[in-house]
Length: 254
Image 1 (cartoon, rainbow, N blue to C red):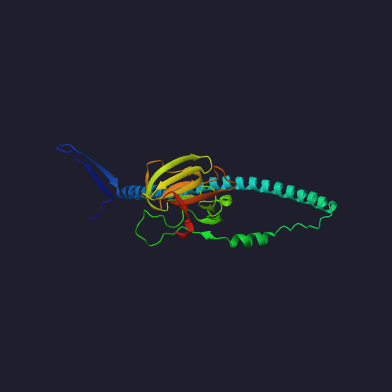
Image 2 (tube, rainbow, N blue to C red):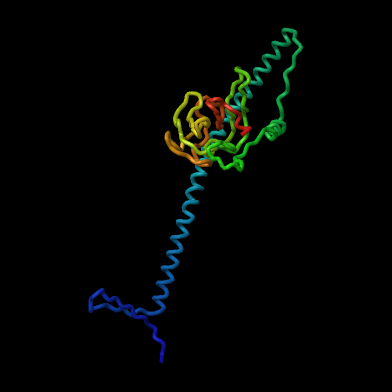
């Protein structure tokens, strides 16, 4: 018996007597099934990689904006360096005219500057193995400590630490709690204050964007802000404080 080259497809309405049938060549039906399968796989792959494409595009835009800011900073630093050289020359002439024996220290080389940066304390995001997530632990961003905690002297009072990092770096909550304040501050710029218990709170300052609002409940390690350069700030960084009974304590010791 010869093998049929056709496939019969019947459509029978529910409860009806008259139906329809179609005869389709086997090769055509197989082609349609394969084509549909390829189309579905293509759609799945498209949506799987579409998010990555959007993320990379957003990252490219952010890098371009950061590059423009760095170019502006570089131009300003160059002007400051030129002005400093001219000022040194004028002061040197005045010192000689006054008969004072004084010499300026030489500018450090780039290698010496980078060596000094390498010796700065780097910080990482890490939590202790404790189970109480209402107690701040670790640090909210990765970067370098540009200014340390200091409360001994009123002249150099700094109730937290400054962590130098690129603008737009994700800031994480160091403990779970409730957002007490989310808004603009004259000194700390875009600032967050999170209450973790009746006695402990944390402060995150100089952000470029806040991702939570007052009254929100946040979990330990959740995204709460993007670091920035708002308020009284000379360079992109995050100001981070821990307050115990409204008194600042050193975050590096927690």
